[in-house]
Length: 114
Length: 115
Image (cartoon, rainbow over all chains, first blue to last red; front, side):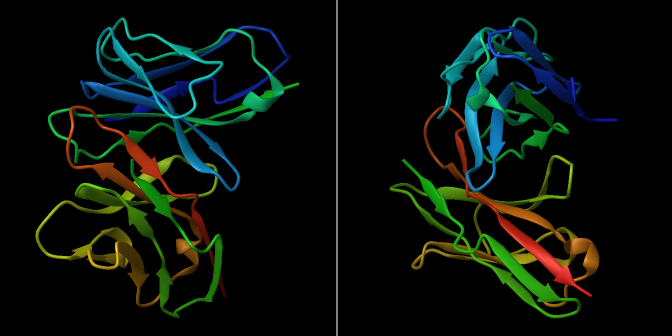
């Protein structure tokens, strides 16, 4: 089954404690992206990656890091989480042959930073 | 840079009534347009997309949208809603040029279907 998986689905942590949210897709997609969703703000892109070892900032990259060492995985790293990073996070992937490809979304990771 | 405006944050509607969710965009170049649906506690799922050709696009679950270039709109419609349509709906725009895929989402419209 084609899917995007995220782990963990729910996470409560404290300010400053490094964490990683994993994202994996089994569709051999080149393009992957991270979004955060906040009430009243919709989805905002954090980082995206066009292929292995190719990443770039989205609209709200501050406080986040990503890496793309393998095509299927695109982890999101919070080196020193702060309460304003409490949010719902979505990973997405798509083919990158052209820009109209549909993005497939993971189920989301709900993060609370105390 | 492109932007997307969803004018209504919440839309209540009675079951079996028609509904229209509004979306306007701005861009200096041609764009691709999408509507996604998010059911409670789930990720986003594509409803429909406009790439080119016919301005009336039909999607899943009986939804359709019409691209209006002169009004820069892409409103979503359904002639008769069901309880199961209760969800949040996001309009999104993707640039039709350049070398990367940047998608901008609207702030979402919560559709509440009342029995």
